[in-house]
Image: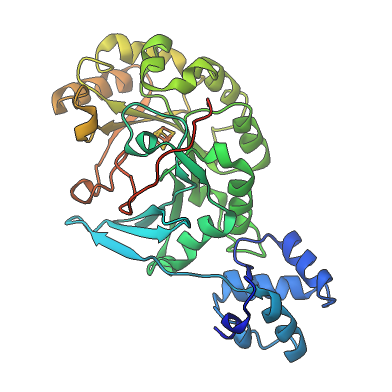
Amino acid sequence: MSDKKNSTPLTPLVGMTLDELQEVALALELPKFTAKQLAQWIYVKRVSTFEEMLNISKAGRERLAAKYCVGLYPPKDKVVSQDGTVKYLFDAGDNMAVETVYIPEDDRATLCISSQRGCRMNCYFCMTGRQGYHGNLTAHQIINQVLSVPQSEQLTNVVFMGMGEPLDNIEEVLKVIDILTQSWGLAWSPKRVTVSTVGKLPELKVLAENTSVHIAVSVHNAHPEERDSLMPIERVCHIKDVMELLGQYDFAHQRRLSVEYIMWQWFNDDIRHAELLRELLPNEHVRVNLIRYHMIPEVAKLRTSSDERMTYFRDYLNAHGVTCTIRRSRGEDIMAACGMLAGKVKQPKAKAEKKA
Ligand code: SF4
């Protein structure tokens, strides 16, 4: 890129919303419509240099290149699973990396993206949580994962289920949702985007009211004290309040609300738990996804439920009016499955953790 000639750091345009691109145009005394042209070149035509932006004047391109770069950057590493899942490693600054998982499946191609370096939610069963929190990703670093995987043009869905709690970085996540769904950006239907959360209030309300994306809540145990022993968020944001809040929104039509439920032997897989879960759901429109637990050495205490228990749990819920399925596991052999993302680059020691 010609913009590398400049010795001062260049600001990336990828990750900017239309309003932010308008501020750039204004500051450089370029016509206001330059912002839309930039969005078109970056998010629709996916160019990586200003030279390619031929409907912007040469002088305008030079002014842009003096201060900004497009800012796309490729993954630094990848590992491919036997089942076709690919785990990419993206540089996240300070010698750290985040993981992005591409999951091809029949007629779908899903990208699971990260929103933070590590995570401060500290869920007991999660490799990411065990790393501690090392900072938020910027909108630039998040949307770059979508735009820079080799399969970018084939993606049908994006899920915020990678490293980090998306609602702990809500401002940047909302910008990325705008870029994905607004007409000046990728213009995807919000139905193609799912945000997964442990249920962080009040940010969940902001997400529910300001977007139409699907929401997935990690419940994992409907009993408050038992959930608290795995997920410290329960101490400050009770899952009962989370589900009550979500019961106020329309998930009966285009928008989907799902509950994620990892199954552990003897911990959350008996009929008492199925009944508690059923009682927790605000209405019949919530879908439950049962997830097989992937053993990680650090959490030897938890063991995965047997197939028989999972099937029994699912059938019980189905028989009691709850739509419940067992989610197929992907990428376990490359540590890309749920709860296994840790980043391959050695991570610095965690900063002092704030309470969720
Ligand atoms: S499960 Fe999600 S919220 Fe919990 S520690 Fe892991 S990344 Fe964070």
